[in-house]
Image (cartoon, rainbow, N blue to C red; front, side, top):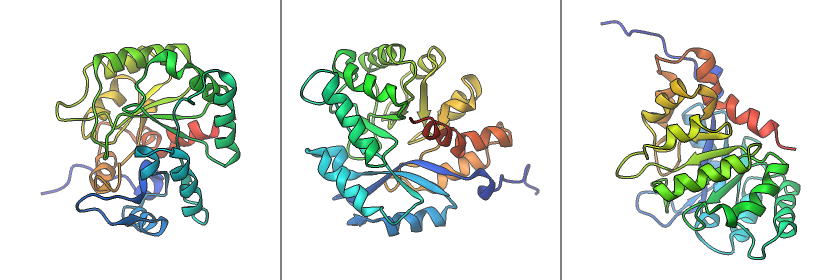
Length: 267
């Protein structure tokens, strides 16, 4: 029996993983500590060219700055690993604290942010100052609905809040991340993407839905992500590599070029 098609070349796809966790994870079946070296070993195993990396404790513990700073030190000699800070609205309202936080992040060489939506839900009045500051610099923002792992879900209130944020900040790239739970994906995700110009979806936990998003909203709205180490990268890599409904250009966009374009747009 012959295979229907030849698989796309992973080298040519130039995979850029947008969701990799570094740090000490106290959780069954995961290494005690995920280091730059262990992450690079995983990337090499699956022919992933580079990755955005965030720190596990920064996602879960306060002060988040401790984990964010530890991340910079951990990957400083690993040019294939790019830092992502986990940030949330400053306690003090107003534009000045928000701008100071974003400027500190950019000065540290961080060009992407992960916003913890489970800790600070997408209430537009609460996020307005920080989103405005991020929008000024076109910083790609991963809207993280996951818990300890990549397991997460959206409520109706979440979707309404996301719509308001997206429409209020049209120049701010927003990427839905960790939105798959036991009941699958919220019905309104694709309608939300199609009704906004700046909302994207990453592939963490998404085995099929991203294909529908790519076909109906366009491949430029899908960002490759594995959620390592909580999920094995292999299935996500092969899903894109063997996607028969996508041509090579669409695969390259999803695999990494969409993310590169967003990062190159930071100013």
